Image (cartoon, rainbow, N blue to C red; front, side):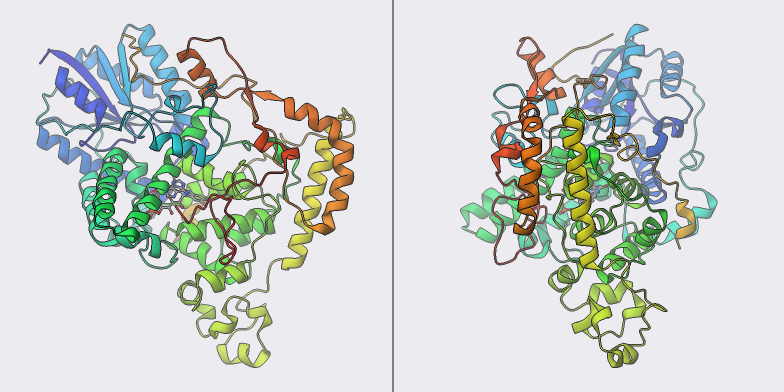
Length: 631
Ligand SMILES: Cc1cc2nc3c(=O)[nH]c(=O)nc-3n(C[C@H](O)[C@H](O)[C@H](O)COP(=O)(O)OP(=O)(O)OC[C@H]3O[C@@H](n4cnc5c(N)ncnc54)[C@H](O)[C@@H]3O)c2cc1C
């Protein structure tokens, strides 16, 4: 072992097992593990109450583990991560800083800046992949372009020649001595006094920390993985792995999860257990969505603010604060939506299916800007994860080539009878509907007065009438889409003097501030090293839009519109955009930079259907859609 002193900068890799940065530091000398809490640098993505509660427990757990191995986790609260790192370097005489990569837009910028400054000061910096099966810059198509559909991406991952490998935890750590201003986990201020009572219940349901994560995962594999394909649709109860908060904070190595699930798959395949095989395929697809969320953020680092597809640039959002409040508080008059929002409010957790339903409602029924919903989820979810949150909201809002179509509007009443057939979920979260018979539970507004009376429901008094009628919502959505097309067509035809490009006003609408407390009861460039996205590259913009599917009534109108826009359309097809993957891949291949062009399958004129995560049509599965629930 050399006598190097290394600062191990922990972030969202709060584990000792399969932690490449920690392993590398431990094998080369003494270590100084540090976690730096810098609220100022989190900006608008300062973590919400429940997420901070989780972080606090998780840091305590990691601290104990590191102590057992021989080194103390130093906690620092600061206004500048760079200053804190420099303080650690000065105090210890360390010559190197190591950390594992993050890919969300906030960390990408911060890490790049910190690294640049440290390198300028002559400090060696080495970063590693601690969060993904494969780095985003290792997956691209044969032309070096970023992949923009999940299936294409996941297929590439599954058939990569090099299998992901994992590291064992270090046997022991040699501590590097150094005196810096340390904080206790309590002093970091992750949980204030007022929040403590609201957080008390969380501890009964969840056990944060890497050592717990291993147990939760082992139990899931032994007891639930086999039936994942059958159970994952159930919206109540523990039908899925519940691993997302652990994975968000890096308490569980995704490579280990992958390897363990793959082993099960091989064993079940040998035993001709098709249910088990199918379950692992779907579970791994879910892991694949998480990977893909990082891939998209890295390659298109603007996606927390703008849609991946450029169509939504002209969408006339209805930035109505009262509707936003009603949605947040579970007061929309649609029982399944309200139940989901109340569960989220009370527990910080909702099933993936419910996430799709409530988010789709906000965007399609209320025309609320998707970024408002994304931020609210970020503030309230226990597993709040910027990349997955962005992927989820872009997926439901017509922003992805293989996500939901923009004009697709799913009726919560029908979804209720499909996903909560007995109404148990609604009754659990909406006590005011507890006595409603199952027949009417998902559409109480249709129930005969005698039924309502017997159930103690007074519409408009103790449960509200629907905030918007479904037919009206459909009509408004269609109008909004036509308006969007018109504005886009006019902009394309060069009539900018009469059309306002509202992307600044809509995509970048200020997100309302919500007080959640009130609502809760030497430079190294190895192959491991972090690539940097071309954040300031103005060409690195959204992809051109996909053409939504349309019904017969709308076809004529659409044809007229298409005639008017055909000229603009051909220009659009030729539109070329750069992605970061393309640039990294291009660098890697040592070729000159070539631009990213939208494949023909996404071209509006190609008329091809695209894949999406989910299909609500039980009898007519839409084969060409990605299924978030299949995952
Ligand atoms: C609008 C919207 C917002 C979302 N916001 C978040 C978020 O902030 N944080 C978050 O972790 N997930 C988010 N998701 C994805 C998904 O709902 C959760 O990951 C999942 O419900 C977590 O439950 P689980 O761990 O039991 O999942 P399982 O079904 O057991 O899946 C295993 C793991 O795969 C990953 N995963 C599964 N589905 C997805 C997905 N669609 N996208 C990305 N990763 C996935 C998660 O890490 C999950 O822990 C969002 C989905 C939508 C539709």
